Length: 259
Ligand SMILES: Nc1ncnc2c1ncn2[C@@H]1O[C@H](COP(=O)(O)OP(=O)(O)OP(=O)(O)O)[C@@H](O)[C@H]1O
Ligand SMILES: [Mg+2]
Image (cartoon, rainbow, N blue to C red; front, side, top):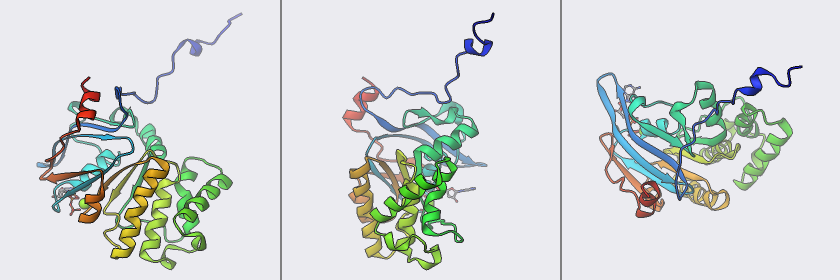
């Protein structure tokens, strides 16, 4: 009798490659990130370390490469020099993932908030918020319960059944925030999240980011032209022509990376 199957002898390959983060927890570790569009080099070797629970803003002139960088850090795009660069998000070396594992990782670990909320017009607020949970195969009752909790927290209890065109700009953006949070992501990337809002709605949204960090401990990376929001962040990174000019890391992080 054969006591085990051949497959039992093969150790399963881990889907993710774990990166050591030494003494403190890094949410983002990026080394030498470059991006070319044809001959045009848009990112010129970005190095970046972001701690868990940090709120980091990225500012810079139009065309400096902020969105390009955010899309790469958020795994929506890939750096051109995969072989001589490194990107780890929440301890996982994402460039090593297959497309399928990358999509799963993104769905479970990362939330996105865009300038134009990108809600689906034919779905209600509640349904829009549930979509990432359905992709994760969360059952309907559980997803809707969580979506209601988030919408309640964001002051939208009375808007569950409204479609995007029946909501104000600020309300639409808060629905997009709830959608970004439904799978409890470890990190949220926001690209001009308040770029389309009046100053009062923008203030409310900005305060919300800090409340969320305090309540759920999430990390935020926010690209913004809003000086007030940029200055509120724990750290403000300045991008000039494809480089972060002040990426000097704190001594605490440096000693953790190079003990
Ligand atoms: N798909 C693409 N093909 C070619 N060039 C691109 C592409 N995407 C962006 N670029 C170029 O890369 C540069 C950086 O673009 P990016 O969108 O990252 O800038 P940004 O800093 O986000 O600017 P803004 O503040 O205006 O949003 C720009 O010069 C842009 O024209
Ligand atoms: Mg941009």
